[in-house]
Length: 143
Image 1 (cartoon, helix red, strand yellow):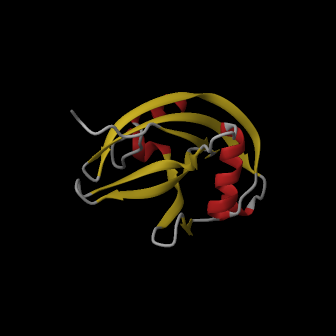
Image 2 (cartoon, rainbow, N blue to C red; image 1 turned 135 degrees about the vertical axis):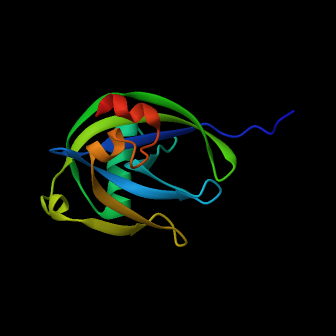
Image 3 (tube, helix red, strand yellow; image 1 turned 90 degrees about the vertical axis):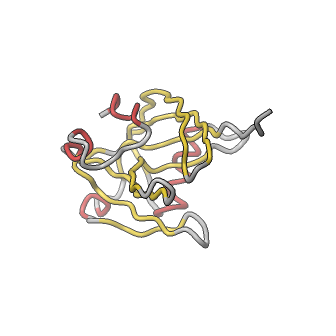
């Protein structure tokens, strides 16, 4: 009998600027692989996914969002650092309120005291050409 994990519910924001999207960079040390994912995070009990999206952007990079539109749901079952993960992802298309975020090359933010992350603008063509890895794969359906 395998030990059961938990299904996580996430809200992620798809922010486009012309041919690029705003993503965070992650690294899987077991696969020795860098990957990219839209910013956002976990939905807390009693919180709507849209409220979670706004809260996560505020907590992580002190950014306010506008033009928030729900675009769909992705179910993702994956392996990260050797452990199986299972996520239900609510995807929202949105924009930054403050235009300064569109001028940034990248920014470093902390999700916790021990984890530093980099958020950056990446040209969608790099993902489509397979030069960089966007996760989950189903996210391509919204680009």
